[in-house]
Length: 321
Image (cartoon, rainbow, N blue to C red; front, side, top):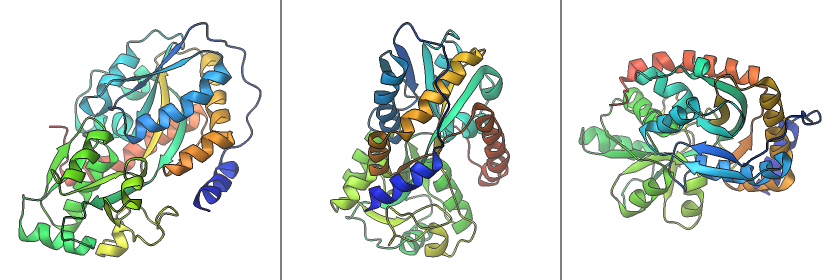
């Protein structure tokens, strides 16, 4: 039932696209991912890539370049030839958060080419069942009782999980330790084993463990409850923190100067892939909802997200160090 609901929303969200433009790739395309295999970005990219390679007529080779909160993949994309042979699945971390928190060797909108958004991502605040906290207020009370002791893991510096934890620290008046990983896979391994106390992680990585009872969901970091976990409260309602909200999304980018025919062809193929029932079904199983855009809409979206997050990051004191 959940998958059908998300598929219905996806069908409405992804408009019919015009016929694919005439550019035709002549060799395999590398799709760079700035995080390790097994995380939400990796799962999303591989799910979409399977359909993209049919539409574009060339193999799509997913290449993981974990490190520096996605910056290594961004730098590799900036330095790639502008011929469509190398593209990147960017994230809120690599496209918005990192440029705010640290000095980069490139400018996101000047040195990368926006192609289109791919998905919006459901995140969940989870703890291991061996922890005593059954509600978010209990976790917050424990953090207040032991400042600087509890730890939360994220899939990388500057991602939604990192900023979600920093925002919770700021709004709830607690002090915790951030433990960044190079992707969602190792993060989940360590929260299952108890090496970190909690995490705000993608549904793609935690849902199977929640359903199996290996993780406990305490809250979702959105303005409204998620259809994936309708009985799980939002952070705002659970902890009486009005205004708490952390969205997560992924978007496809290319090198600077990518010719418009290539941008249009890949954008059309991306949206065509997300409209495919099998792709949409597989994305829905992981809490991923198609969120297509034109290249111009993506550029405006990145600017708007940067303006939104800059004062929040500065107020929370979050840095990439």
